Image (tube, rainbow, N blue to C red; front, side, top):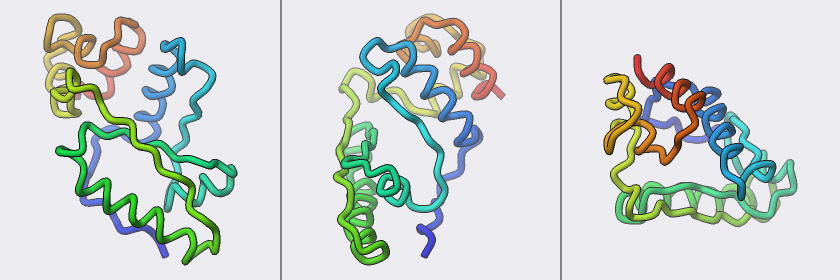
Length: 145
């Protein structure tokens, strides 16, 4: 059975978002060479089982902002593997945003990118905590339209 369709639509493709995430990881000394970004269709836990991954990571803003939706996805990821694949589910680990970044949203990034605003407190660079010109240029290109 395919996963339930998401009601959310994105103007930037999953492949482009993965490209940005990979580039951001390469600019972080702790993450460079340690993070693999893949776009998968269907259930992500199926790919995790194929890779024999013990854990899957999900980034959330906060439990207050994303808790209900993430709890439902987590329950799906716990129940579906034993039922559909007859295997134990990979552990889900949640990475919560620091409180100082809760204001960062795709809407804020799109707004800054549409205004071609790179610097300043509401610029793309400040929102993303990034100073790499090439990466910021790509964000402007993808999100600024």
